Image (cartoon, rainbow, N blue to C red; front, side):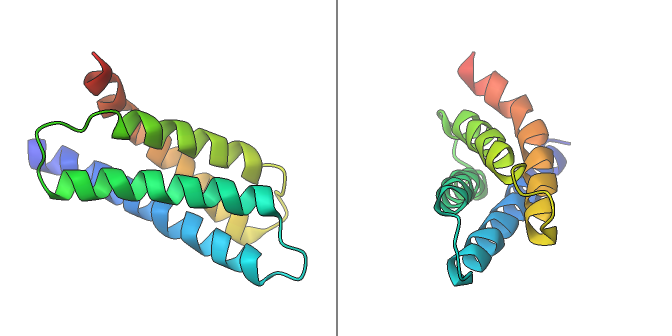
Length: 112
């Protein structure tokens, strides 16, 4: 049961990491890159990946990594919502929303 929960957290964070990285890479190749979007996506990708690496190492203490991940996901979502016409950005919003909701469970637990 515990391993299944951990796998769910890892999958949600990896998916958000992947889409944030894709979104950031696409923006960097754009003729007129939106730098605020790049910054938020990069920060979110890093926060999500930090959680994944800590979970995969089976560390006893996650510290504030899940909370940081959740916060960065919501900040990324907020920035991405400014550009709803882009399919890559829509995918980023969806994956970050799923990650933030999923990771909230351990974020709250680790803060107590």
